[in-house]
Length: 330
Ligand SMILES: C[S@@+](CC[C@H](N)C(=O)[O-])C[C@H]1O[C@@H](n2cnc3c(N)ncnc32)[C@H](O)[C@@H]1O
Image (cartoon, rainbow, N blue to C red; front, side, top):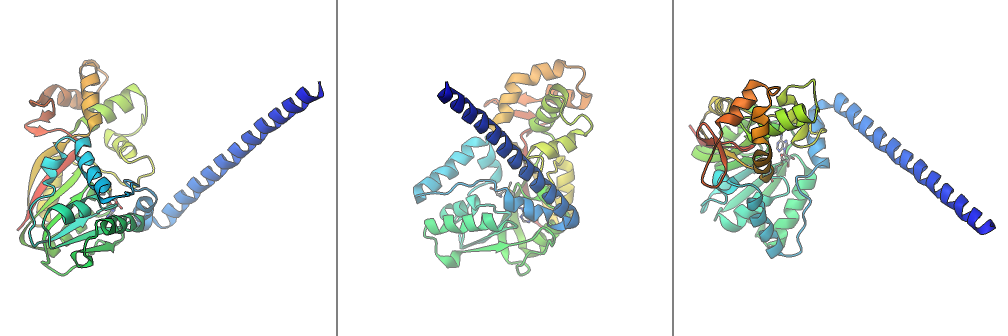
């Protein structure tokens, strides 16, 4: 009798201990979240830097150069049309190439290995991302003189480069997260050589992600974010609820922003995430038939046309979330 009693007392004790530890962990988690919110309120101009230092776009680290190269190929496969619309890796023989918001260095490495660039400059607000980029470049044994990594802050759009010193720049998935994209575009214009070219990706409002996933699946069917506009709900869901800024742009609005900064700009289309193609296949008809969904979203979904690969296009442009633009400095 005693042994089972002791066992059951121990079991009950363990359950209580686990519950107590759980509540302490929850308590600390809540405290940290509260602290972060307080710091963000006190120093809002650094909240973007803080978020992207906490939240890396990927934590991959690679044992061999081959693993690193395989990851680059794998990444193209995750996003149909990404390779085509981003123009990666391009031919940049002897050029100076800037990757603005390079994150942990996927494209810095790809450009160094495959584009023929003389020099690749990666810039980002996240010291952690830059450290990973440096590690990965070292794995490939790239000569130090061929690259430079620079830490920026979102609080100051200045780009620490000479006027007209860059032949080509790109910025993939960055400007929609920044406080002042117009000022950054003006800086990019200043550092770009005359007739330099560029590719930029920002989130595309005219996309399956926006009209089907955000407005219909999340807001209407799951009942989440009932009091937010679709654009506000989009901001909460693409990079997680703590991401301080995540805008989506109508192509004509982003083109106007780039033109104002002095670039001739063309919208190439939106590349897709695999999830968008799945949502479209599974839910498009149901969404169009659901009269509670606002007309704007139902019309968008009705107007989509599938190309020969089954990729949706709206008014002649692919309708993925990866809104891609080709720029030329005027
Ligand atoms: C979604 S990640 C994209 C990273 C990389 N371009 C890629 O395609 O893998 C967004 C990056 O933008 C950076 N970022 C955010 N605000 C920035 C700013 N104001 N200036 C430069 N980089 C910024 C973040 O640190 C993060 O690495």
